[in-house]
Amino acid sequence: MANKLISEMGLPRSIANIFAARNITTAKDALSLTEFELMELLDVGLQEVRSALKHALLLMEQHVQKEQSQGHLPTQLKGLDAALCGGIPFGVLTELVGPSGIGKTQFCLKLSLLASLPAHYGGLGGHVIYIDVESKFSSRRLIEIGAKSYPEIFHTKGMAQEMAGRILVLRPTSLSEFTESVQQIKVSLLQNQVKLLVIDSMAALVSGEHEPGPLRQHPLGWHISFIKSLAEFSRIPIVVTNQVRSQSHDESRQYSFQGQGKGKIVEDPPKHDSHLVAALGIHWAHAVTIRLVLEAKSGQRFMKVAKSPISPPLAFPFNITSSGISLLDDDGTELMGPDINSIHCQGHDDIINSDGGGLH
Image 1 (cartoon, rainbow, N blue to C red):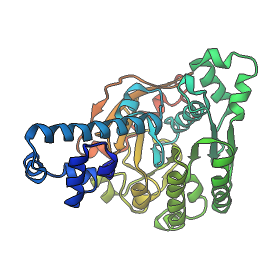
Image 2 (cartoon, one colour):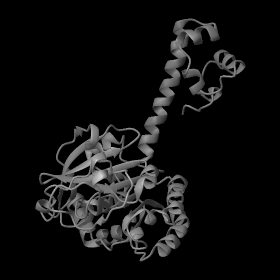
Image 3 (spheres, helix red, strand yellow):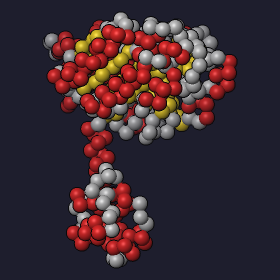
Image 4 (cartoon, rainbow, N blue to C red):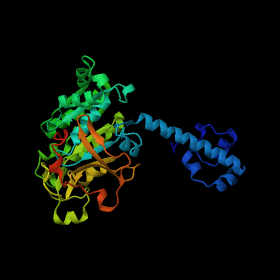
């Protein structure tokens, strides 16, 4: 909106003409000037300047509201949706990072359900492509979440099968198969009215090709570029899960999940608080726009907004129930210092099988 042309903003013609004569062509150019600079430039009074600025800001606010209403997949988690200004954004990569069993796949199943729900129930009314690398996708669990969350829909005869049928599950067994799949996705996005792409999990796919360490990041260069361009091209939310790996002693001092270095991918949650980082390395970390970290401390799960261009770092305690992930606090707690990037696994074993949380 900042690049919107002055001529398209509906300003009085006399003011628009002066802006054009002074080579001020966009809203950004005009708003970068002070009120007194604008008074001198336009040779008008303070009231007229403020009226013009108010008009420009109103147009920008309306544009932002429109983008938020049309550019997000609401998660139905009130606190998280508020922090992300509407939910999982369209056109960018959103990453879920966390140890095995913490709830990443549970979150992806709920998002898949929401993307396929009719719009008047808060969904996107479309299809979903779910790339299930580790065979964790469960139609039965998806239907259970739907039946508990939206009984009025899922108790209708045949509706559960119809909803599940809107989700296309692909299970590539190698990086080459994955590459072939994603190259065909562009066509599917247009033909099948796809509203969500889930890749669960990218780290598992790459770790199957190479030994752990920096070398396994090498083949991701093309995939990072392709998936980012796919998000921008399709204007749909793309959600990718990522595993964690153990830190070296030196890395643990930095306690940053975006650090690089050799480490072993953690498939099973440790029994004590561990120094963990996200797999795939810093180049992948820079590619994602939103990073949500799922972790456990003292027997309680937390979802952290660890990276976002619009939200401060926040942590929300959550549970996993028969209806999916549920936040225990919609306000969240703002994070400072190393807590923003750290990934805890303390007490994870105590909660992994409780209240339907055994699924990943």
